[in-house]
Image 1 (tube, rainbow, N blue to C red):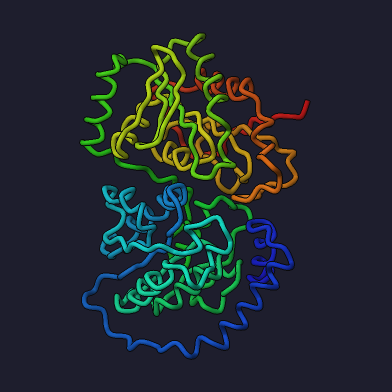
Image 2: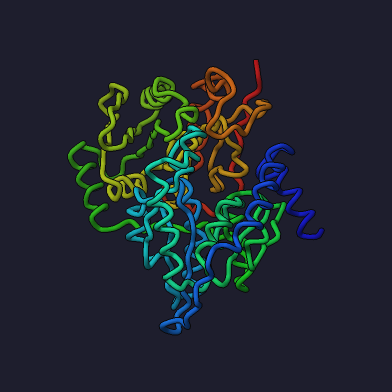
Length: 412
């Protein structure tokens, strides 16, 4: 299959892009081709040293950065002498600062990644526009040798072109293939976003693998987690089950009361302790039980405590991906998104989902008055998945990457 045909198929499979939207992208491409000759080309100076300077573009959210970790790990291991920079959401560079995967963080606030409102995303009078353009223009002075983006998005391809990097590696699936120097053909059999990122490395002769990546837990985080367990009276050999009922996007939240039902039933029938995770500064209503403990911790301590959990029950969210990187099995409740693209990847993981919902994926914009794909999932189905997983896993079990079990819930 040629690259054009592969991209057309991937556009339908991976992006679900309608004919109308693709027409808009094509119109934007034609407008770009007529305007980009006006952008001055910088004088390419020789590199200041022999190290390859690499830019990676991923400015979205915590879960997206977690999905990026296997790619960054493989990139670092393959090019240990390279200087790697990450163009990242200004609020999230803390996530990778201690992981030794990136040498430099370039903070940016991209207008279309900040809002749900389509008008706010593309408002030319937004206060985000000028700072955004300054950062993009500054990339041209940094003399990167390679730039990567796995977004399959014409906007990212345009950012790579504007950075004036001589080697631009990405996908033409979502348009803008002419802006790339290395237009990678998609692998239609590997649609998970982590694999889509990893495939980019074939352009620089790195063999493909199924690396899952991992996270380091720092000493300060370990001390914070140990202090939490000690002050809550949780024995060192206790079976700890994590619950994280939050999600950045409201239509991905199953509901605190449903999580509470599952947690209380587990506490009544199992000799476990429940850690109810909540982000600092947000109100939380954990179940009232002497073995249920609210954890409102800094990020490093959160990672360390999460790594101590036997399993995590959560929404489709960033913490789900973090648990995967820490080899903690998950029960993930999916509504609007496709777990084949964004789901957990551990061999013990469970995805609880209503597969018959015809409108999936809708991402951030539900066409109904509420996300019925989540509301139709009952606590007993999640409880069953958690009980089965608890029986399967042991503290010393390794969790190699494999397809998670889908707990498919049929309609009544």
